[in-house]
Image 1 (cartoon, helix red, strand yellow):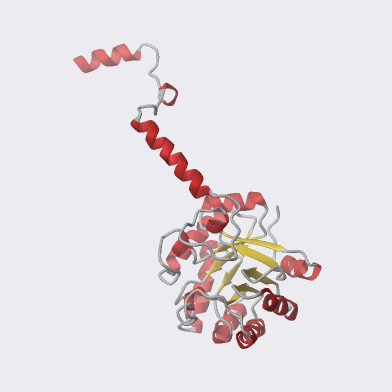
Image 2 (spheres, one colour; image 1 turned 90 degrees about the vertical axis):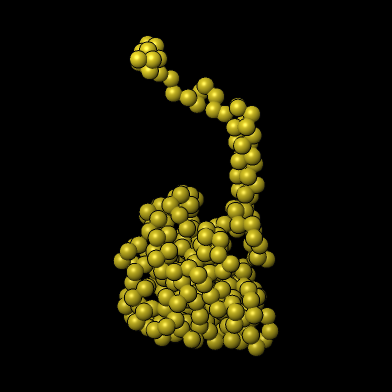
Length: 281
């Protein structure tokens, strides 16, 4: 499978072909995703909750993101990979934003970066894009600034709030972003923004009318147990499967049923007698 490019995604938008987008945080998951034919992978700062057990995404730092993005790139060399800019890696200055975006390119071989915000981060988007880096914007529910939103709440549910989402979407495109992610907004707003923008628009809880869909892999496979957003569909439940396997293992150890003979290495012919004689001397 040949790695898709930004031009491929723009062509898919024009043809009405949907983009399959998924998060990945490690080498084996990235391998599975590439084998499954995913179009695009996001090394999301959601790893703060899904991997490290943080209460949110804000504790995540650049070095963690780089560490995980390197692993994902090794696992999926032929898949388009997006690195997620963590909290305070781009907000404080344009210069810092460009420097940290560049780290994803130089150190991990990512194909693009993602950052949260609309009008307020337009200068950072413009500067990163001017540096030759593919940028994905992210508006709607933006977890890094969820405190200002009153928590992890859907956005765009009133006419005024929906109008603000459109304003942010247009600002992101005008600033030079190449793609946009909409999170937790009504499908009517997602449809309007997708039709209004020339760039590919991806949805995570923004309805079926966008150019593609993103899910958190830990939600998709039923691994993350703390909560499940409304927009999630669980395609399997590995938490149940893994927990049951661990229970069976513990029971076998306690019952002395594991390891059995077939799990043990045997000594070479005649060596056991030599060994027993040697330890007697």
